Amino acid sequence: MIPVVTPVEMRVIDASAPEPVEVLIARAANAVARSAIDLLGGCYGRRVVVVAGRGNNGNDGRVAADRLAARGVRVEVIDAADPPERFPHCDLAIDAAYGTGFRGRYDSPIPSGVPTLAVDIPSGIDGLTGVASGHPARAIRTVTFAALKPGLLFGDGPPFAGEIEVADIGLDVDSAQTHLVTAGDVAAGWPSRCRDAHKWQHAVWVIAGSEGMAGAAHLATTAAFGAGASYVRLTVPGGVAPSGGPPEAVGVPLAPDAIAAIVDRDASRFGAIVIGPGLGRDPAVAAAVRAVARRADCPLVIDGDGLWAMREPLAWETAAARVLTPHDGEYATLSGSPPGPDRIAAARALAADRAATVLLKGPSTVVATPDGACRIVTSGDARLATAGTGDVLSGAIGALLAAGATPLAAASLGAQVHGAAGRTCPAVGTRAGDVAAALAATVSTLVEVRADEGAVAARSGRRQ
Image (cartoon, rainbow, N blue to C red):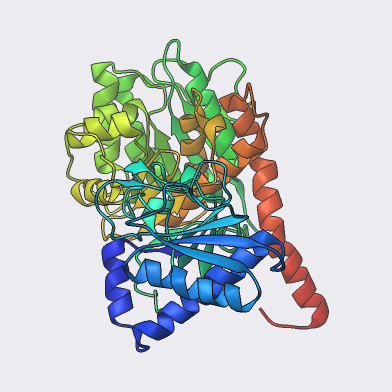
C-alpha cells in the first residue's frame, strides 16, 4: 500500500524531519530533474522552462533547474507571480509554482499542449480535495514527495496530475492512517483456502431482490461465487431464487416477517450475510433489514435498499462487523447531507457515527473504519458506472468476509478487484453481469503472483 497524507499531515512530517530543509529540497530537486530527463529522453539540445513560485515548491523547481543546466539542458526560470506575456518555446515545462498549501485562484502561464511536469501537485489543484481553482496546467506526470496527496486522487486531480511518481526523499510517513490499495496488496492479502476446507467455511447468505429487481440478487450471488464463496444461500423475500440465476445458489424463499427469526437461527453457519441489493422499500422488508442488521452475529454487508432501511441509526446488539457501501445519494440518506469534497473526512465521519466500516463509492472509492483507518481504491473506471455494479461489489465483499478477511481488508480488496475486473471488460457496452463474470479470472490472475513466488521459494529452499 502507498501512504496518503493530507497537506496538514505533510507539514507535520516535514517539521519532524531530522534533516534541514535545504537537504530535503535538494533531494526533491534531484527527483524532479531525473524525471524531467526521463520525459525529455536525454539532455542534449533540450529546452526546459521552470515556472517557480516563492515557497519550497518553487525552490524545488529552481534547484532542479540548476541540476538540469549542469547536465547540458538549456533552462529558463520564470516567476510564477510575474510570467512573461509570451511563454518561451520549450520541450518541457516544469510547474513548480505552488504546492499543496496554495489557496486561491491560479491561472497557469503554461500554454495548453506543452508537455508539463508538475512538482508535488499541479498548481491550482487543492491538495486535500483535488478541486481545481482557475486554470491549472495539465501535467503528463507529477512527481510528489514521500507520500501521495489526496488532491492527486480525487476531484479534478487525476486528469491534471497525469502519471504520478512518488519520490522517496527520506521523510518518515509511517504515521499515515490512509493508504492507496494496489494490485500487489491483493496478491499479499487475499485469503487462502486450507487443504481440508469444506463449503460451509466460506459460506455467504445473500438476502436481496424483489419483484422487478431479481437481477440484483443474481448479480450479488454470482459475484460472491466469483470472489471465492464456496456456498451461497439466496433469499428473495416472498419469492424464490430468480430464474436464470446461478444454479449453484441454494434458494430459500422467506416471507419478510420470517427473515429475522431464520437469520437468528442460521446465521452462525455463514461467514457473512449480504443484505439489501434490489430489496425494495416495502415496510415489512425494511423492518427485517433493521432486525437483521441489529442482531446478526456474523459479518454483514449492507447495500442498496438495505441502506435506505438503515437511514435511522441503530444500536448494534452484537460485535459482528458491519460494512455499509453507500454511493453519494445513499450517503446523504444515512448522514443527512452529501459527502462534500473531502471524501476521506466524510467516510470517516459516517464510519464513526454508525460504528461500522464505510465504503464510499466514487471514481476514487474510500473505505474507512470507526477508528479512522482509511484505504483508497482507484482501480475502477467509467465502465463501473452502470446499473448493478454495486450489487457485484457487495457480493465480492461478502465472500471476502466469509473467508475471514477483516472488514477493512474485505471492503478495500473487494473494491480493488471489482475495479480491476471492470477494466478487463469492453470499453463500451459493459454490463454489471460482465463484471461479475470477470471476477474469478481477475482474482486468479492477481493472486497467482503470490502462488508463483511461493513456488519459486519452495524450489530454492527459501523459507517465507
